Length: 127
Image 1 (cartoon, rainbow, N blue to C red):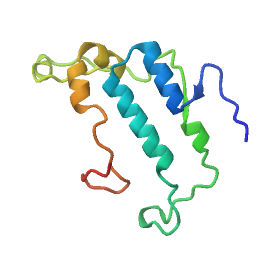
Image 2 (cartoon, rainbow, N blue to C red):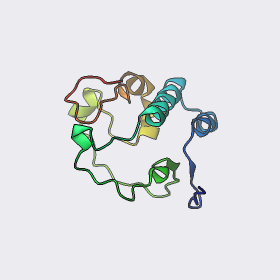
Image 3 (spheres, one colour):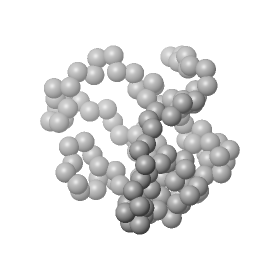
Image 4 (cartoon, one colour):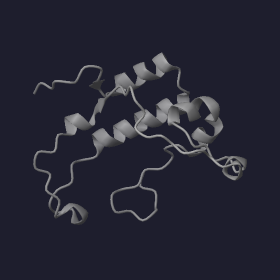
């Protein structure tokens, strides 16, 4: 099967994650978490009709290849409101993850993508 990707996009692969990390100079902990998440995605089988939580979902024309494409955004997806001084005093960071990595790496390492929950989970870690 051949997949056509839009200009400025590339398939999301383990190698691509490593290339992106070296190109952008992102911290090692973030690259490790991206790789762990990608491996989890690749190793997790598609749900079937016998899996209770997925029994009534119609997957039809679901294109998983489209879900593994990294795009390039030229415009921000959202504009965030101003952060109050009170929130700032409590170490709340209210900006894009790319900015948080540069400005508050210690918070990102402590909290960003630290847990994976299975579909339907109510808070117990399934990683």
